[in-house]
Each structure stands twice: as C-alpha cells, then as structure tokens.
Length: 211
Image 1 (cartoon, rainbow, N blue to C red):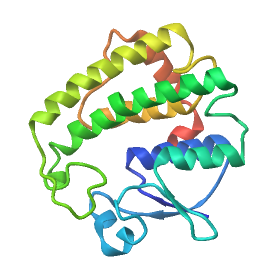
Image 2 (image 1 turned 60 degrees about the vertical axis):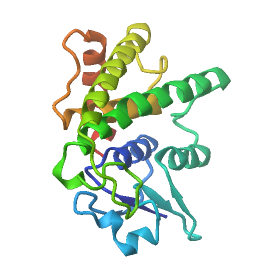
Image 3 (image 1 turned 90 degrees about the horizontal axis):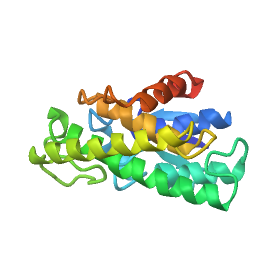
C-alpha cells in the first residue's frame, strides 16, 4: 500500500496522525499542492478531483477522502480505537467529527484559500482543473464560522478531557489540525478558552502530531 500525501496540507496530516496513532507505516508519495502538482495530468489520473490524501491498495484500488481511509484502517486494526468503542461513543464521534470538519477545517480553508495568492483561481478544494476564482467576502464568513468552532470546542472540553469523551479519538485529530490550519491565517485559540488551551498543549505533546 502507499499514500499520496502532501506534508503541509491539513487533510493528509489528519490521515498521517491517525496512522501514527495506530502504529501503521506506509510508503508515501509527496504531491505539492501549493505548486499545483495535484492538478497535473498524472495525478488527476489517480484522483480526478485532485484531492489528497489518496490511499492506493496493493490490488490497485484507490481510496480518497480522509475519513474513508481512516475507517479502512480502523477495520483492519481496531486497536487503539479512534472511531469509538461502542454504539453511543461511535455516534458521538461521528457527530462531533462533522462539526470539527465543517466549522473548523472547511472554514479554515475558506479563509486561507480566498486570500492566498496561490489559490486565486482555485479557491475550492476538489475543483480539479476548473477555474474557481477566490471570493474575498468569504474570508469574513470563514472567520465568523471559526468563532463558532472555537466556542463549541471550548464547551466540549469543559465537559470532558477529550473532544468526544474520556478517550483520545479522531475528533481530537481533526480539531488540532483545524486549529493549526486556522493559524496559517493568524487565527488563534481565544485567550478566554482555557480548556481548549490546556487540551491543545496536551495533544501537541503526542508523537503523532509531528507525523
């Protein structure tokens, strides 16, 4: 198996952190998103949307989308469980995972892509070769949604030590990647979010953060 990766990109990082927590090592092939390598003919033949990461199995099957890749490895290697241990916990993880993706990851992307010079004509991930111009007004919308993301995250962490309960999970991986992605646009954890700050320091000490 091999993983088509981009070391600086948040979604491939989520997959790498998941694999590192599982102790799984894969061959990786680096694709430079900033330089537009993901939109070249060779890579579009692998994934027509141009999105990363992509997992290629030994039989040639290719799986894109971070969560699909993570579910695949959770089934192959259930321990440590990162997507829930019982029906209740699995449902909570799915629910909170979606919120961390929509309010955190997507909003960070909205802010970053609509103001970065490398994405003026490809402001939406997964557009392939289509020209999708940046919309500066979406920066403000993304910032507003990130406010909601930080409020929600602080609430979760005021109730439990991790974002989805008493055990580290995929939700923590997505949340810290979203926070670091927002940091690319100088959007930081609010000073008043003391639970989030303590959690961030704890999660940042995990070896998988640097995977």
